[in-house]
Length: 393
Ligand SMILES: [Zn+2]
Image (cartoon, rainbow, N blue to C red; front, side, top):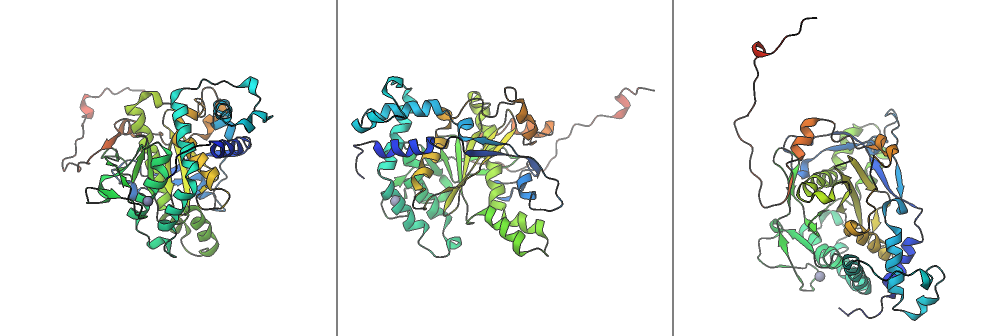
């Protein structure tokens, strides 16, 4: 890998993304039903959203709210980063969109470090894309590809370098002590405890954890949403709902991980409360992004899925992924604040509809090494009605 000399490619790509700040970035999802309590592992979770049901003719139309790029991301901060890094390149000084007099050169170290990771990655983009293609495009039938091989190559050539070396893979992924990339480059990766949740609720081990707070799940299906659309076209006479549920299991899994992780992270780091915490679902060609803010009960889904191997969009995908990975630095604090934005209240996920659900998820943790089995002895508190007060009308 070559060292980074000129930053212009990362600056150019970030500028291109910023030029489209009015476009729709994310939409709200409402949960119609789910099995969030009962001890299901993530892989068996079932979540039905209003978006999935919108394919039924007789399902009442539910509204969804869209947020634009500038609603989600702190454009002012990002522009400042572009301006600061344009200074390194003489040509950029002439740029009319970023006049020199407006430049604020002092940015927090966290942002500078994050931008450095993007610069380095974009500089080596072709190398990383080729390494990923070797594994992800090796088989004509991508469904037969080994999930472990995919996790490894995505760790070494995407999530780990883009997060500045802060991506751990699940310790259960391989029995060998040293874990080496599946593309043949020989690079080793770091394993760690990726367990999230609590036994009585959704729980399990995710494939990777980025920066200690964002789960990554590799999905075998090419595109869960496309398959749902196809199911509607092809299987009109079958039990459509069963079909949709079975085909969209990957979708359910990532949503369950997103929600559980969000509670677990806030339980551990209260400063993250009020921010939608992202989670990623990786299919062989693209990356799905969901995010959940447990304080405001807002579930979000990135509207345009990020394509990895499309000629023109790879670099834009990388910039977007980099933003989500660094959400604590670049996401606006009030993105899902239902007090400051009362209109968002009607778009809540309605996940926390019962007090029991909330109290269970208040116990969710992250970085778990192993989960315990359920006890054979139910613990219930019985109250005899003989001791209760009876009010006569
Ligand atoms: Zn490799």
